[in-house]
Image 1 (cartoon, rainbow, N blue to C red):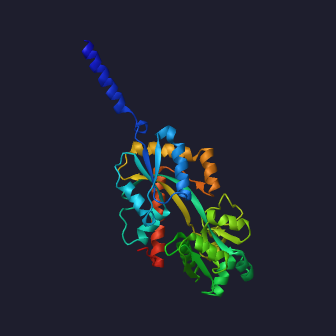
Image 2: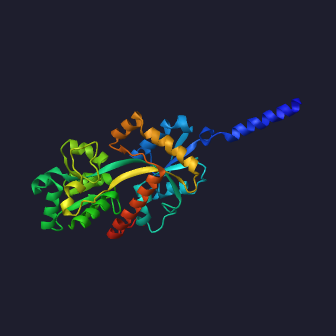
Image 3: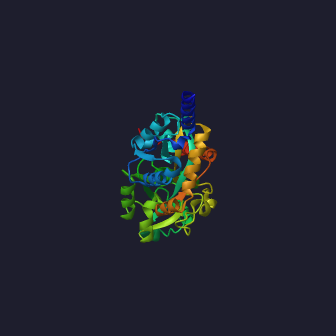
Length: 328
C-alpha cells in the first residue's frame, strides 16, 4: 500500500509539472534583435524584456545584426514554434527588404507569427533653415510650388539607396508630381551632416535623430511623414494634411518595429505573449522610455499586426519597384 501511495504521488507530481504553463519554464525566452546594440529598437527590446520577466520568466535579448536585419529574423523564422524564440522585426525586415534584396531567406508573412506591433517612430521632412528662408519655403505647399516651378533644382539626401529616407523622398516626388535630385550617403549621420552644412536642401529624417537640430533652430521641420501628428512635436503638421491639395493626402511613412514568432506558434502561446507585451507597453515606465526616444507605443492584437504588416508590404513594393533600388 505505501508503495502504491508513493507511485500515485510521483505521478501526480509529474502531471503537475507537465501542466505548468510555458511561461513558468526555467528556460529563458530568446528575444532576437536583428541590429547592433544601442539603437532605439534594441533599447526598447531590453526595456520590454525586463518588464515582462514577472509574467513570462527571463527574457534574454540577443543581437544578431547583418544583411539589413535579414540574418537575425531568419533565425526567428527557422526556430521551433515553442514560444522560446521571438524577434523584434521592423519596417526594413518585413516591408522593405523583401523588395530591396533580390533574395532573402524568409517570407515576411508565411514564415512568421505576428505577436504585436511595439512602436512607431515618426519621420520628418526637414530643411536646412538657411535654404528654407532663402527659397521662401515654410510649408509643404511652398515646397511643392517651388519644386514644380524649378524642376531638378532641389535635392534631398538620404542614408543610402533603399533607405527609409530615400523611399520617402521618392514617394513624395511621385505623389506630388515633382522632381528632386536624390543624393545618397553612407548612412543617416553623414546625410544629416550634409543637410546641416548646406550640401543638400532637405532630408526625410528620423525624428529622434533630427529633433535636437530642429529645437536648436539649425533645421526647419516642414512636416511629419506619418498619418498623424507626432506627440513629441504636435505643432508640426503632417505631409498628408498640409499637402492634400497636391496629391499627398495618402502620404504615410514611418519607422516601426514589432514582435514576431516563427510560423506555427500555437494560438494560446501567441495570446500569452501578446498579453504580456501589450500590458508592458501600457505601463508608465515603458511609455516614459518610449517618449525619451520620441517613439509612440503602439500595442495591437496579433490579427491587427498581421493586417498592418500586409499593408506595409504592399505599400513598399510599389515604392521600391518605382525607384529601382537594390541592396545587392
